[in-house]
Image (cartoon, rainbow, N blue to C red; front, side):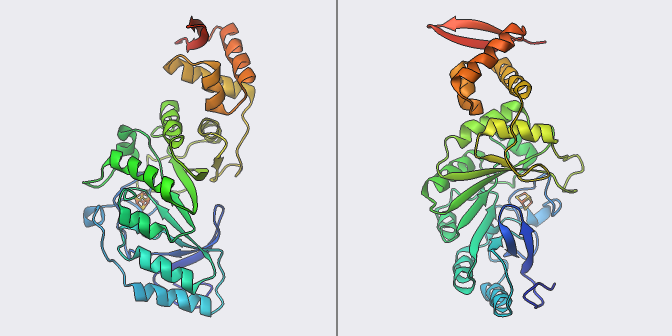
Length: 319
Ligand code: SF4
């Protein structure tokens, strides 16, 4: 493969214009697919056989990768960011830390790592990532049942440990964290899953952005379909002001109309009674607006009001 640094390369790809990172020069530390997940939407296809493993290893030689990076920049190659992603999960590579350190010395660029987050519970992985400027952890599910459906982990991957690892990483990391959520129609886009995501994300420190993506091209499973713009809008609203749709939509947080807000509140009130304060927090709207929307839903006959300890709660009626 050739790149704009002019050489034939094996471990570098691009640079490609990335909406979230700028001009991104990709680095692959895996050689061929190695991953601890087998996501239904994976553009690299299914993770099968020995490729699906939670074991870390040395897949390519550090020197071979750094030699390509040196060549690229020596020949005038241009990029905004050197991004570790490649043919699977970069944190499985035992030499991630040293290649990040070398990339910082060789290039004038920022270094980013895209990770599925499975190994963030390991102190040595968090230490390796501490050398990067930007980390983009994936977070496609807040419940184990959805995680199993969308990410289909390798044996030994522990969902609760993974969530704790993400929390610990966010608390300790000094660079920028862009959390990435990839929504797949009918699999991880339900309101209850999105509310669970929101609840968990609220417990994370230092999240700079939440980037919502969806299936862009054929992946591991044909049934993995993209969500539509309406679903992306709803997800942005539920996930809060840091959420932005980066794939196929406007690229900025999309403001929902009143009817859409009412529909989200109604769906959430069908799951459990909600107060104006909760709606205000959930949708990042002011309390008075939340109260008015709840009253409108009550007027429309869609929710019932109850008063508990002097406070109003609204419960959605089932059709
Ligand atoms: S984590 Fe990334 S590389 Fe691994 S299966 Fe999922 S999408 Fe593919």
